[in-house]
Length: 158
Image (cartoon, rainbow, N blue to C red; front, side, top):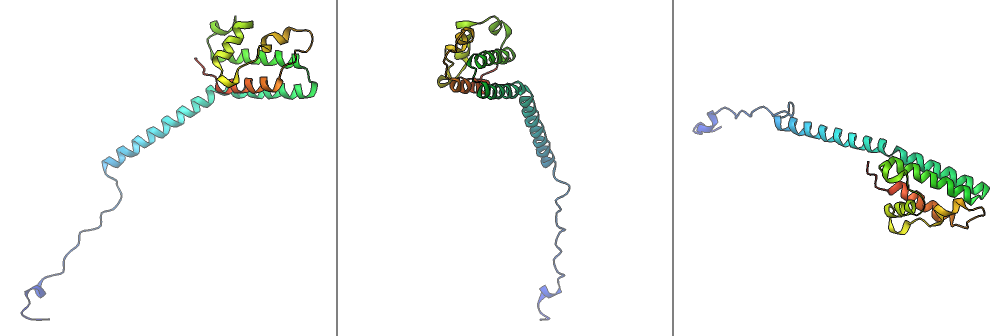
């Protein structure tokens, strides 16, 4: 130590205490509240959507049962009638009753095809085949695919 060095007489520098992470600043409380509100809103939306689409899941199960019954019995007329009734019940849930309830025949087919996607149109035998005495000779797999697609993707207006 040099007696002539004036800096040697100084005390060491004092460092301030380390700033802790708790409690957070008010801005972080605000961000946390916004994140919580967003999580609750998203959860509420998906729960509501899941409940609103319960009829779709139930209809798809019924369609699978109709298909399994057809695979056992090979009764096209029964499959047509069951699929037509299933589509009508789904439409009554998803669309206003005045649009769906009284429609039959060509009007019903036009409604279904109007609300279906382009490549998934329903064949005309859907509405005429169930009333024939003999087997109508319809492509059952195409009808099942069209019905499944329509149940999954129709735009509900209620």
